[in-house]
Image (cartoon, rainbow over the protein chains, first blue to last red):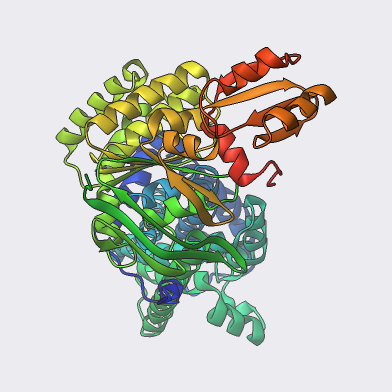
Length: 271
Length: 306
């Protein structure tokens, strides 16, 4: 009599317990060992952008036309820099960072020999990626505030948003990590996904400047577009009902890719 | 005396696509036993180990640990198992001591207990003075000892050692053997895989020899030697006259020609080769005790596997 046990490899909802926090905690402990170094890039990068693009480029823009939706150019791009920090913090943590832990360090193999399951390892990685988004976003938000570019107390909610956006980008990142044959592979999502988003998601100019097709693509397929809209609204204190659509888009994509990412990773790690 | 069966496999099969890594095997491991899986590369040893500690799902068949199915109760089983894998997967982001502490956390061990247990293990494996060193700075032997220490952090009832001494110098090897013997004495059930037949002879109560996904023989090292090889092996230089003499005086002997040397095996009792050599002296003759390597090569052949 032979009973097939292959069903355990089928696509399914992840079963998660509190143990996923132990994976999160492992990454947190490593991060805290070198926290001083870890804080430098997210601190310096937005300052450079604000100086170069906000003051430099922005001075040309405001001299030719008046403002974008009632705010100066530097006020327009500051929230975008905060959103970009969420994206970078989580996406790179769960591509390069997770890949190094999985492939080079065999950290995941070590953990799944304990009562912690593969699903929990990946969920822990995604939660940690989201945490990096919050940390990086917090630093950039502080910089932006220091430049006097935060006009609403609602801006504090950006940290909550960062966690959600971080979950989304971490889940997307893990999907790439699950199929990456080697670490150089991440150049593809980097150049084809992250860089276009960095430039075209209503970050450095309003989406309305794009042709209609471009606007549709940005709204339908670029996750950062929705993060930028929400962040900008909270920092400038300009709320409206379409923001609910942005939020719903992020929630749906996060849930879908969270489940896909865990299944893809299981397929890679459990053989 | 039949003791309690701790691990039981029935018709256990594992396929990777078309490749059958483990092919319909049955085996049992009793509590307190040290059981060795031997076999050429690709025989299915590591795959079997991975199925026992629930990280590789079975294709078909049944595998239970302490009466629990590996498919249904992976967490419960992993709680009672310690694993030292073939490939080093210590966490390079942490020091020696923190490797143990972080690992203890995965087992829900309270911090204080983890610290106490880690210090005991570092002492046991003579790694105390390396406690605050990062993994990269350890020698291969120290890494292997730390892997073993880590495998013991949860006080496992079952210890899985996948090639525990591959690539180690003799000093490090003997230290690990000593520790494995200590653990066996304390009642831990041990399953190990190895390519070193002396290691299996030293440590194992019982060995299972695997080849091409099948278990082709099992028994205690001494019983297997007795059964397949006999007591002694004669080695002489390859010489026509000597070969002729064997055919006349020891017609039932098995003769193996390896280039310019000849090995002779026989079922006859101790002393037969001495008498033979008195009658017909042979060049380069030496009589040695039969060992597990002779058994292994007889059963699995001399062909390279990879």
